[in-house]
Image (cartoon, rainbow, N blue to C red; front, side, top):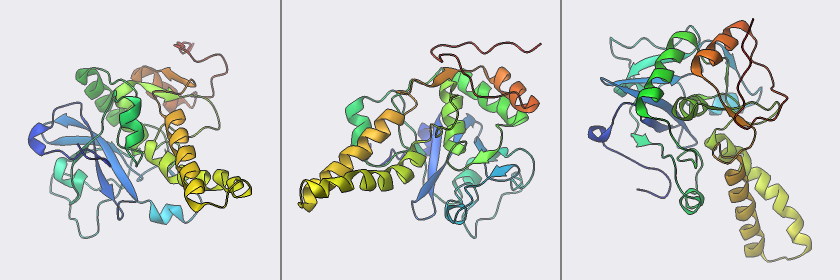
Length: 259
């Protein structure tokens, strides 16, 4: 087990595993659910896509294959449809290294991971439930891709936990999105420390503390604004455009049935 991530061999894979592989010079990673028989279901930037409207749209192209990678005959490049696709493991990795996302880690382990998007405090559901969610979403979609609010990691975490952030104007549960945003925010929030101390080490320690606190507080396993949503209910509401902000308290909330 590494400090930054959890590299594994293919022989240890089992259906229901949340796996990922780094893209774009380790800036970002692409995530998916291994469903067995050498197949991975994952959410891509192809099809319906909501970008950030910034230069990050050009940098964070994690869902596409690496340059020079040629898809095998059984895998069609994901350039149409709702963006959720099934690929062989080789095409998913696109020449990258295989890692497994960790669930139910303790707080010390979580904070020791310097990089977000590699583990969570949340508990995974049984593997058969995870595979069922992934296959159902493969047929029905996961909404519009958004690099910060609805990305490949959000898809994989939902398949593993059934949890969704339902409060409006909030970031998705993606740990790597928090890492990308959290670093600059930590630097900004720690800047007032220059009024208290000119020690660069003290300011750096404060920035690290703010960054770690933001990662911990926004982890899907710690947030209060999440609810367990059945996959059939999710995809039905997405297809009807009825998946809206939920106003009542969200602890163990049951979504109302549609008439």
